[in-house]
Length: 185
Image (cartoon, rainbow, N blue to C red):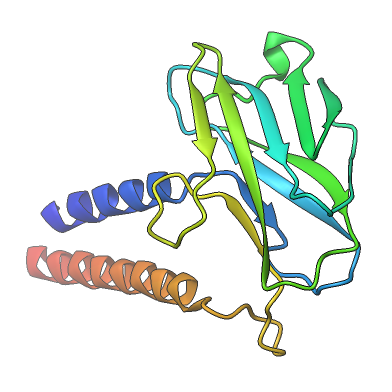
């Protein structure tokens, strides 16, 4: 039983650590014009998300799609902003919403960094703006343009390792539960 509790705590902590504004798909090709989805999770249990701002780098054209229940505004200089039309449209605690933007042509660089601001009903603003590496506390959404030719971005191994750790943990829990049941019989 202790193992299950430890595993549950581990999974809860890893899910909170990965809760940030992200861009989908995470990989594209330079020169392409693509529709991107900015996924915005509300990781707070006590306040709704009441505004989302995404900053598109200079030189990259962007056209936001309408989002039901939200007003979208292109404020110029690459700033796109969404606000809910009513409190019921805000991103509720524990929920996620996707905001679509067509961008391109994409520059001929290794990546495009999309910084974002997430505003909560209590006035807190979370700045998803760090772009120095995978250990950032508040990482920006990064679109990888340096694919290795096999359809996978360079440096994707942490995602695979994380998935393998979760699968391994589930196997260990299943084995322990099975072992305990056999002992109880």
